[in-house]
Image 1 (cartoon, helix red, strand yellow):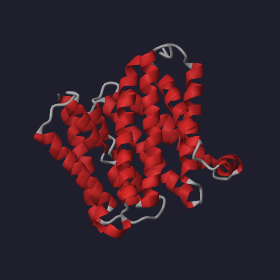
Image 2: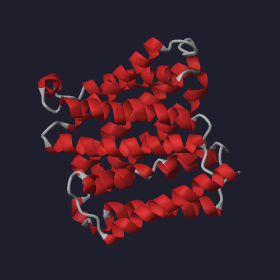
Image 3: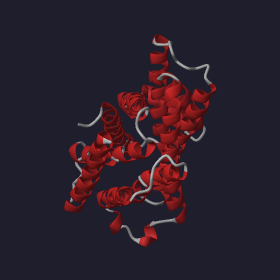
Length: 290
């Protein structure tokens, strides 16, 4: 049996994948990446604040540890969004996605260094299989060297490091207060960080745009609801395991592209998806038994 905590993280990753598809639709409609990222965080902030307004008990807002780790989580999410889009701009989606999903490697290395995880051959095999699955899924092997820039690679790795940062931020904030308080602080930091690079004209024009419902859906699924589930799940889950389980996200995003955007899925991509899902499932079941 798989625990409820793992199911929460899987659902969060599923919603992140769907929100990635929604973001792809908005980008195709001509919206600037910084504007899409800002509204994803801003709608998530409104979601968290409304929830906090109605459930203020045991919020933990007077706890300094809650503020510290929530701010770290907010900076991690902001960095992840920003560096990922810059990586896409200076490389391409396949390179950016593959490097960002190196996050489990960073999380495991940090966990090994902090003695949170014991380094074993099985864990390194799992990391290798997941990364191989991501490479096959993104078709990184088809990318020529001329299309990969040093800046694009650097930004992609920073996106992965930021991903790891928000995993640890939410993990250590969770015991000190309510999910709505943590999200309110984290998304406030995110909104402030992302409003600066956003184009003011586009930010205001969203409110009267026919795409407004998509922005709202992006914020609720990609920030509010997904991170709520993630905080609930990671409270009793090791950061390294959570990072591996979250690899359901690229699978969901790919399937969204096939079902909604009319993209095609090759044999190697299906093999990659299978590797990710099988490895994540095996890790989840094994962890729950322990």
